[in-house]
Amino acid sequence: MTWPVTLKLDSTAYPLSVVQRAAYSLAGTVTIQVGIEANHISLTAHPAEERLTLSREQAHSLILQHLNDFALRDHINRETAGLREVLARAALAGCGISQ
Image (tube, rainbow, N blue to C red; front, side):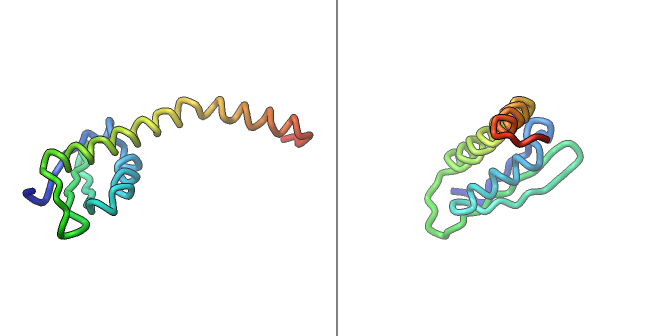
């Protein structure tokens, strides 16, 4: 594989917090340097171990899979925030704890 692997991301599609979580989750496989530009986030990935045998396409795909996974988790978290608050209030009220 030709290292490093570089990706340039739109920061509206992948917020910095999502990129950081994805980079952390891949730390055992690749180390990722995150750079912030105007409306883009750049990623530069290096192998975490010398004997890593991923092809360029596999590494690129793996990084995108993790980015999409964490972006979806972030979206679901934002979409269900109100519901979680209602459920927490109901659970606390059912236990006799008032807010």
